[in-house]
Image (cartoon, rainbow, N blue to C red):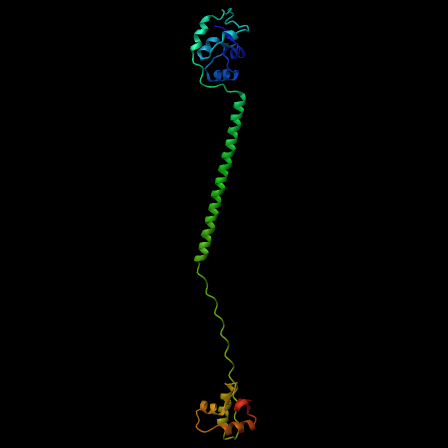
Length: 221
């Protein structure tokens, strides 16, 4: 058998040089120490040899002049061609580009999932914190201070030597607790006396102890 260069082998077999390099890399084809391909290796790999394309000089194997390609080469015409279609450098570059793009998209997807997980954890922590604040007991509102009671009215001493001083003092004491004033009849009922207090009230007005307001109502001076 003859030996061929990679270019001549690609022309003879009708396949691309890239496919031949792939076969060599996978071990399907073996090269001579000079880097050539034996036609027997090409036939063993299932490649077809087109005798009409063998126009370039063939390097002899072990310095022996190769015999012309005999018709027995046509016996291999029934060999099934390789199923794998030739892969061109352009297809290989596109494949690597797609693989890099897929890798970038996968990393972005993983980062988005991590951000989603972090946001869900933060939302859960905020909900738990709000729930704890709602469950805390509320402190009672401070009671409103009650208004201070009005100061007790000063007791007016009865005039010395006046026998009516006790009754007058009682009338003044009652009127001090009723600043709006009372009539003589109301004073009589309040003090629980049987006699009328009209004359007593008139006399107290004359002495400047009481003051008469509208409709017979008296107030303490």
